[in-house]
Length: 104
Image 1 (cartoon, one colour):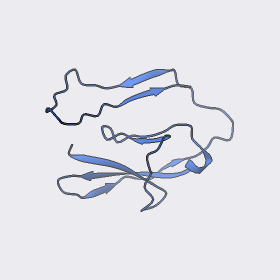
Image 2: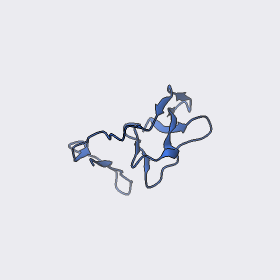
Image 3: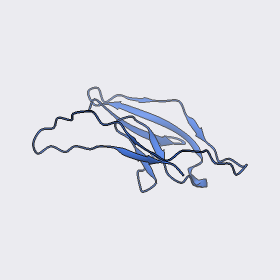
């Protein structure tokens, strides 16, 4: 709850918009892209903002490139979950649990 995460695509103020292929985890800060397309090629920079100070910190750019050799990374199918053993929540509050399916 102390920080929020966003990603910039190529340069400010072009923020990555979440949609059916893109998701930014507010738990880990990771950017997930399903089924990469040529339009996704570019530099991605993470922006972390402290809710207390509202001071954003910009990370170094990470390039995303398409492989030209036709080889895809191999991922064994698995479900990524990191749920706490117990999750306390106030009555009437909203709780968001993140779960990801990886694989090909």
